[in-house]
Length: 479
Image (cartoon, rainbow, N blue to C red; front, side):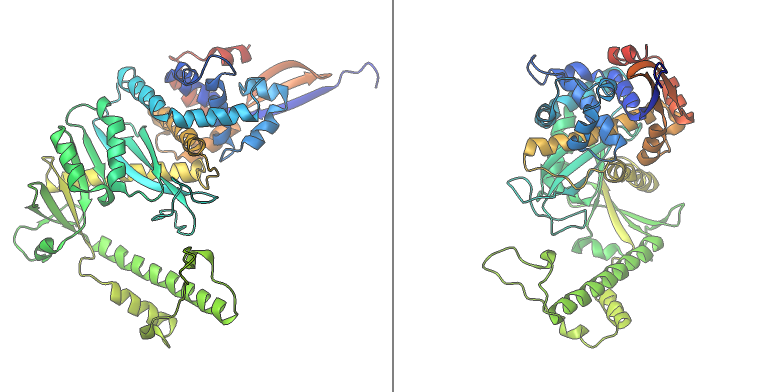
């Protein structure tokens, strides 16, 4: 009807953008991010804020989807995406982030140490891989896949988490076929200038090596790691040998000195032994079913799946069932496979350290290392870092850096807000998505804005950040 005003409401989920703004302000990241480029062009900090928030909200980043948001002037203004930032400039910002990632992480480390007094005296370090939806390149390589995708090229990356706060202090990205041992030295080079003397590194057997242990010891740092059981250790595996201790949780411990003079503690756990045999069985079941799949493909004249083939042009891949397993039932074959994997070391493991801890303290500290594994779960599940899609190394590392900044935002919020520390990244993101902004339009013109759907988690985070000023862009939106 003529003369009747037409009203329209638009509801925008703002929780992730709201939190990113708070954390980026707290870490004083804008000047650092804008300092990675020349003065001309749109603000890199504004683009990165938007990319991190949108990636968290959408369970993975898509620049194409973000461009659709950018077509709405109101949404573009809210997310802080500069008007002149087109897709090419967004991609350039991602590459710039990848190229300057170490500089940005060092800025974050300085702020955490100097402004928030993060102790950084004990770090849990671990490494993982993410497969790439594309072809192999100089850095995107085939290697040992922790994603269980040996048929796909990958990159390797590491994370160091602070024991006291859970904050991710460092991220390293290396080529896909590097192992954890040399990768550890990249992480150490990134962090060493920010750590107090005597800081402790806790890591798994993959990064254990004489070079790494000597490097830490000579520079005044402590370490705790797991080592593989070698031939000289086998003589200690008898539980009736004098010197074994019975710990509080039912684990047995035996301490002796290793060849390099470090304390080695041999542990035996009946629970670990049972879990090892369960893993043997699961692997045997998976391999048997895979074998049946291969036999079916061969019988029907179908080509083998890519992961069973050798990529070398001059080599032909042929597969056949091992003679000792022919004619067996599935259960008999599985039991025979489990039996063949027995080593006599099931249930045993060795920890080595240059710290003066007793057997129980050593075991308890190593078990806390699961925090680093939780960080990888949050990256891969909560922030959807896989699969990655890019051939350009800086674009690829920039994409991983965006996920790392998302992890930093969530873990820093948990550090600032004790009541949410037990929540997973996925839970926090879901609660943040509920927090929204409703924009009221009349005849196409904006008439007002109001927040809605807050919840206890949002309220708790808001209260914990009260002492930190909001950014100017957000203040202008809240008018």
